[in-house]
Length: 491
Image (cartoon, helix red, strand yellow):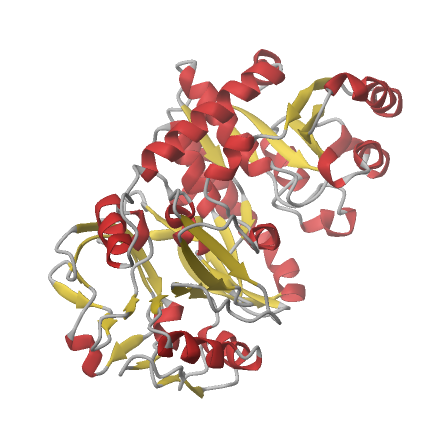
């Protein structure tokens, strides 16, 4: 087995994902064969990864964060990098993905009982990820201080103790109370878990680090743990794909630019990183619109993103009054793009006769495309190479969806995927739907699409921007953390 080190947080959204990606890139730069691993993730931002040994053309689902971390390592993403993925469908239930494939659905209470059965899959994937690697950097989930869930934990100390992986605790100073959160974690952890922690680091510091010297002394007094460093606010991290929907609150508004793109924040929004390439364009302002707020009248483009619950989100879409806003946007000549679940919403009707998404089995669509969708049990999960019908340019992306869409507007497809028509376009060409995630990631297509909306000079090399951001994060971590010590404590 490869040596390993694990980052766990004092809470959610403390920056573990970016730190693991940055450390992965730093280790790669040092010449190490490094891999990421996250035993359990909860996110509707999924990526398609290889299933080793599976010769079919389909792939499996992992969290988008592990996809990014694999890029940081310079390796192909594998389903074993995130063996358990939870995709929330309701406030109390989620779809459970195990080693890339749908395992079933579980309510929160039922899932706690299920965890014990999933540890075998976690440890099996753990062995596979470490095979041939020099170092594996593991990301925890939530906080090890959730001791009420400890007995069945597979994401934090439950995994660390079983796999004998030392832990670095991450505290987020930006949210406040970091001394209490680190010291409090030390206080309430059982001794077996406390022994796994080899030290801590402080993340998201703004200003003069020396002002926190007394804070570090206080933490050492309460815990006896060593500090591996204080990481400043990483501006380069804003150029990396975001995974958790919690960040959407911070993306609700953008800087005014030539083109405003409005994105309704659906309750079960999925794969909203589809918008990241547009956000990176200098002349494009992407505005995520929260529930209760109208879609801005000065938006030139509305993008309806993916959804883990198309019918439920479509009902809420109307309750928010966004259907009226969208109709007014169309009357003003505005453009609309629907991706995956957003594409399904643009039709006349969405039907779910088997109740796959829930108890509501049929609802009226937004009526902007002459199509209808029927949900079907079989799930499409695959990476794809395609071609834009509008601009005759190559596309790269992936599909993760349920449902079959038919209707007259599908005779005007938006793309050709493996020789098969995908999506639909309205008669005036201003409403586009597609099942392909990653549509805007194709630089040539994005440039031409923006040009059709009156924006010239688009089409930056988005993937190169991500690579540069990873390099910058790695340099910052090397400067502010004792990476020698962190890597040296891996076992």
